[in-house]
Length: 358
Image (cartoon, rainbow, N blue to C red; front, side, top):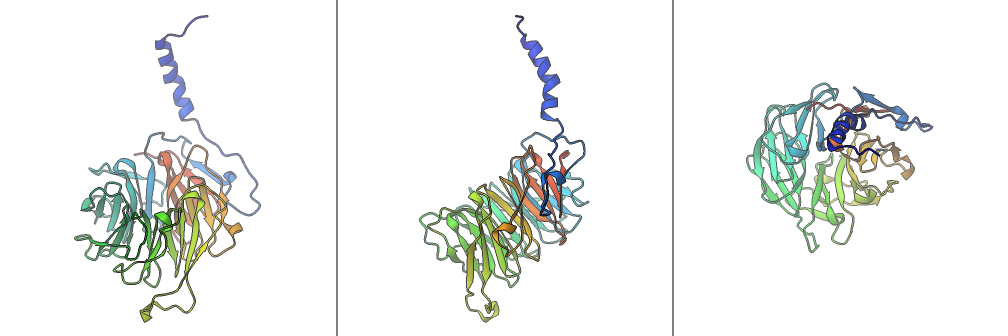
């Protein structure tokens, strides 16, 4: 039997490997009796090739139907001005993992990184500068109320607040947290009436009615649940987490923030129908929304029974999805994830923009 030389093996790898790595992917048709987003409704844009490099994406934020930003490994920041049809890379001098991006308007936005940097842009994401560095801290999320007011959360119970557009950042704290170790705080959002809510490790759910001067912990210290993200509609919130955790937080009828009294909140655990890790969610004003994670994408109908948390088939070739943002109020979303995945969810189908050029 003739042995293959190393030179021949190298030649074969050059010729054959590209066809293995970049072969077109297709989804097997499946019945869609309930109108759900199944793999038969997945369209593949472009050539059907996937860029197999470690450009995992975690952050995505849309300001309007056309303009949005995405971010991920190695300081990657992308911008689209056509609703996600095409993306261009924004050059930055940073190599941090871009964890979350939030723009308050078409020009002003912030991004937080795994190395404790808060980046700011005042020209629509074309250029970025360091607004603040929280040494040795992994920052996880940011919420911008307007161009001057924002909150950032991260590891070791980190809560930062600015009221001057990022010129200065003030540290806030979980006033009545009783746990031994400070939790990793992973998500922050704001109710319609002004109440802030944050979530994190140890099952922490905390709220503030005074812009973060005091945070009341509703749960935490004992739980093994880690919540990874939170989003709101009206005066309700949904948080997702590891192991398929899903919880709904609502203000009880008759509560009134303007009275200055601490509002009564109800926390309700919801069966997500999965034990896979969930990483992010985005909600419409109606409360309907999209949840993304290790197991794919879930469609959420707010306040509905568990059965209405409808799974969407996982795209072949992608392992997880790390971020999601609503593009408009009509059920359209952009989803980002591993291997540079950029997906458009168009209310009744998934469109995979697989050839991402950057």
